Length: 178
Image 1 (cartoon, one colour):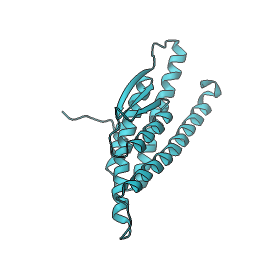
Image 2 (cartoon, one colour; image 1 turned 135 degrees about the vertical axis):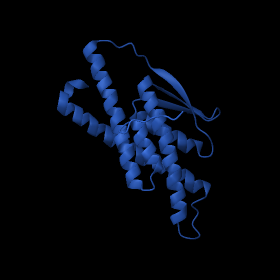
Image 3 (cartoon, helix red, strand yellow; image 1 turned 90 degrees about the vertical axis):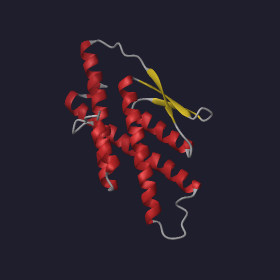
Image 4 (cartoon, helix red, strand yellow; image 1 turned 30 degrees about the horizontal axis):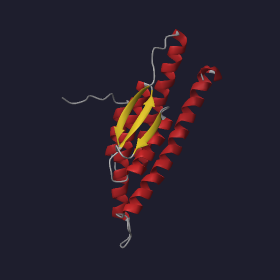
């Protein structure tokens, strides 16, 4: 059984981001997926505000964060969680992170984190191919630093995307939506 994805859904966009060989295209697909997830969360909150029904409570999921570079990967998860309106705590002894948030947000965080890990691996492989002879692109310190820097860039991009979506909704509904 194959998973059928809607053409403009966040999972479909992230699948396209993972499969492209062009960094700019992957960035655009990932940005659109984040914008859709953020807009969905805002729309759900607006609907709950209009109906007065809010039976949802925060829940926790556990996300395995495997070696190597578990610290850098957990930092990426923490960055994605923050942008997805969740919080993450890494336990190195158990090699997993606990992520707390509402169910819809948690699903988005887990989906985006997994996709970004795949995209980071592709970027690392490409960097190794393009590196001049004698560079240490395969060293542990290089790869760890790359992932930390990658997480930082992703965090900046996700924040910009969220701010743009907030501004768009604020233009539609006024500042009262918050």
